[in-house]
Image (tube, rainbow, N blue to C red; front, side, top):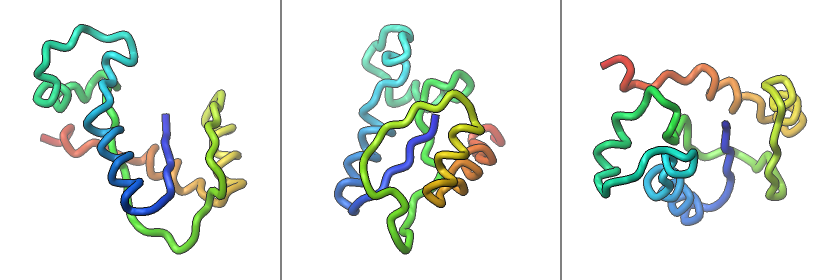
Length: 105
């Protein structure tokens, strides 16, 4: 899955907090019960895809997406085609090349 967001600094701060800290990815995917210690435990679950990882954040010169939408693609080629139409396929390239630094420890 890939999520691309554009907006102001306040909206980004709130959305980043939601995606990285508040969202319980294991529960959303039908995972195990949470015993209240999710902050320490969720950082160690990098082998099971039940987390959200920030790949890049920064400032771009102009917006590439002009309206909000959710697109569900059936494969990488369909996703690449949609992002290419918005001149944003480099986001997919970054996500595919990304390696979690915790795997190097």
